[in-house]
Amino acid sequence: EETGPLAPPVVSRATTTMALKQRSPAEFFAENKNIAGFDNPGKSLYTTVRELVENGVDSAEGMGCLPWIQVTVEEISKARFNTIMGLDEFERTDEALYHDFETKKQKDKREAKEAVEREKIRILEEKQNVKGAEAAKTTFLKSVSARKRKGTMYYKVTVKDNGSGMPHEHIPDMLGKVLSGTKYSLKQTRGKFGLGAKMALIWSKMSTGLPFTIKSAQEKRKFISSFVLDIDMYKNVPHVHKEEKLPNDKSWRGSEIAVTIEGDWVAYRS
Image 1 (cartoon, rainbow, N blue to C red):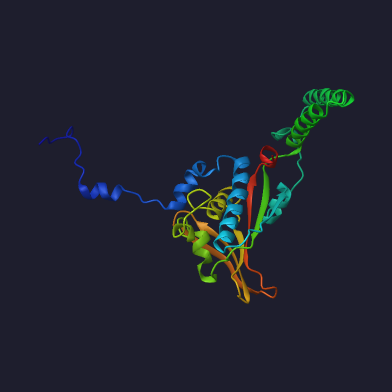
Image 2 (cartoon, rainbow, N blue to C red):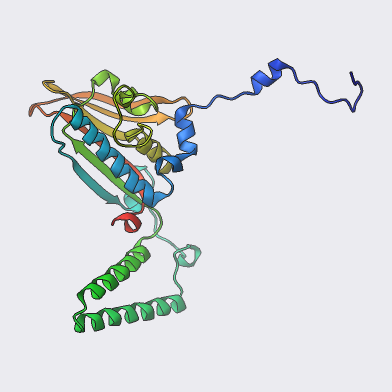
């Protein structure tokens, strides 16, 4: 056995064991969100809508009824988002300091290019080339919309279904705890990894930091469960901000989930 300053360090089994680190499932999916379809803001918006809709369809099928899904996608400007976050909005004192500043030369070049595109559309319309004109219009409007958008855009996605609803006491764990829910006891037909709304919640936490709202009612229940919650990604446990029971006067059954996320509607609206 070697001794002295050049001898290799002795690593005991106890030292190796203490070096191990355990990660929660929520933390894993947050760090590897691309495998669940959350590669970028554009794809994340599309995947959020798809996952929430599929979640509602699965729930309705579990009840043996035709699914009724209502989807609302609301654009939230940066100014409104700052208001929601409790931040004040100020006017820019020097436009040249911002990345979206446009010099006179750049503006003239852009306007000249837009004039050429408009002329191209006019010529196609005169030749009654409807298909070509529509394609040119779509390309032109996309470029204009992309230019008008300043900075990151945010969207509030709300999906309402007529599924089975969720038991009041289980809602925090069913939506705020990864790898916990009914899709692990029933055969999963849609979605990825059974995550559904949970991955959208993780993306919301990462991109906006805002919690999401869930309202749910089961059949013949006289109340609607209402929660505002998010997830502790390092502990994989739900964090309930608000919990209440609302009157269910119309005997509604189903779930309504609303989540605010960063997204790109222009890139993925088709």
